[in-house]
Image (cartoon, rainbow, N blue to C red):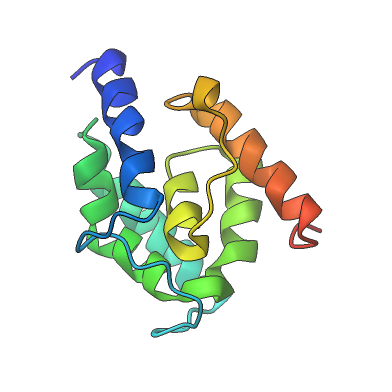
Length: 130
């Protein structure tokens, strides 16, 4: 699919992240499966490899490695913020699932770098970005 399809799918995600619960959203506050920095990096690599041939956000967020990152709960937030600061990606969507928040302005939806920028500002505001 082309970029337009990704933007269209991202436009649908805030409905899911703003209170609508599906089997893919959990809004975890505590870890069900804690992750070390090395394990986290391995999960990110596994996710990146697993989604390399898809443009479907549904497939990206349903990938088992993405789900394990989300399942690690708030412990993953510092890792995710560092990761998206170094390399913006759709991993920003995990932050919304974990926190239940969405600091991304409507105009930035589907624009990974702008989405990452909004989450990084959120991380700084909340003292989570070093």
